[in-house]
Image 1 (cartoon, one colour):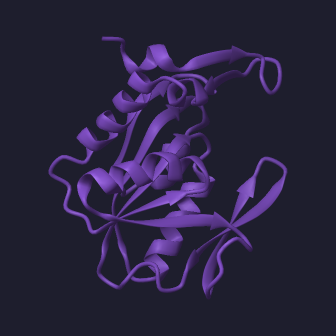
Image 2 (cartoon, one colour):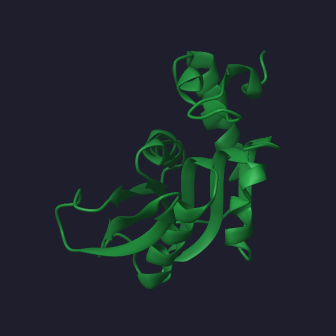
Length: 174
């Protein structure tokens, strides 16, 4: 059996020179790679008590929903501004050149619920940090933050001090 890292395609100098882009679509395109990714992420949740998985748009949906389904939990989407139909709460976060806003339905997390946040990749950590703020604003408790991949060189994990953070694959660079 191949290791999960073998399913990740690396594209040098994308989107700019010096960047080694880690392409998750090559994992998704291979049935064995996808299964290994989901199973590995589920394995990281062994022994974690939680009520709901929240995933960030859009690749957090791809990984969060099958994990929630397999574990018999509900799933809450964290979306870009203006994409949710009911009353929302929002959080702004920094991008490389500007800011962005994510939202969650105001009734998505009940006070006291234990939440696992899922995304495909942690780079600078801004999106997931904003997601943590939304969960906590609704009275939820973030008990685990789970990524398929981590770019250690961007130090996104530093923004999540005090939280249980796990990534299946870690890369030293950016």
